[in-house]
Length: 343
Ligand code: BGC
Image 1 (cartoon, rainbow, N blue to C red):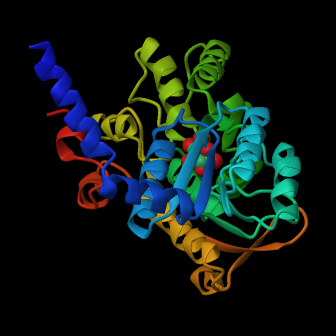
Image 2: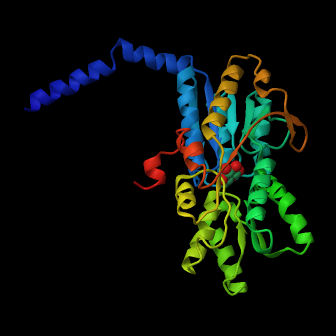
Image 3: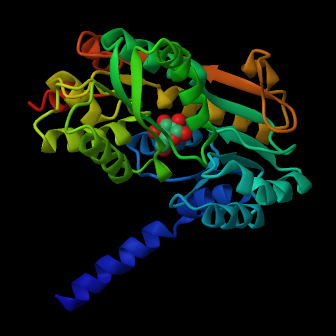
């Protein structure tokens, strides 16, 4: 028996180290250009979807994609970026935790002639080559427009995303274009207006609990910038038997959010097709690795960072409420009906 097992182990070894296996390894190590992906977190489901889309697209075009995920910590992400540069990455795709604090690591990339793609969140400084995201101010407008049409008068809790995240300010700016005029008119009264540190659902829950405490349980609407913060707010409402009675916004089309939307505890979410964003990043990175012109893929658009106009691609997003969950999320294959409806 023992002899037989040894034989099997030997056969497997020979098979793995045979000429075909060696060739593949050599091709990978020697030829495939290294593209590096630095993500800020996987706290939200969307970042997992982005990563999967990029891995699939990279494999299809023969890119060696290296991935590191920071835990909402820029020091950690800067170390990841430096590691990628040492490994010989020729393109960096970075979704920063804190764009300002990422600048020193990016400077090193710039000095080495490594191309830099700001992914979903803008990067600061001169070393960013292109920015790929969604129209984030427009997303904020969608949130503000929808919630004010549901609740044109009353008391609001306003939350914004992490203060370290440039997107958080863009979402809030868009939402306030609809909310501020109603505050000025005296129709909307703001109970609390707070940023959610690190976008953490537990922080959003605390903010909502405080507001409920202050108002003796009477709140008319909650602006939650994404589905994670919406989940925290809704947990606080649920504890008081108020879930489904107070409109709450969201964004990201997370599965749990889609479930809350069909159950009626969250008013809507916003679908940003991260599969498309991921594919676009790899398409551009691929051209960059070959030294080819990638600018036609941006269609000529630009967005300002702190020092320059950055060539940009901004994809559009879609409101998803009870009426169109099937048409937008399920028919597009983003979520499965049996999961959304818990069947
Ligand atoms: C992204 C959102 C995400 C949030 C928290 C933002 O920059 O645009 O989709 O929910 O970060 O990770």
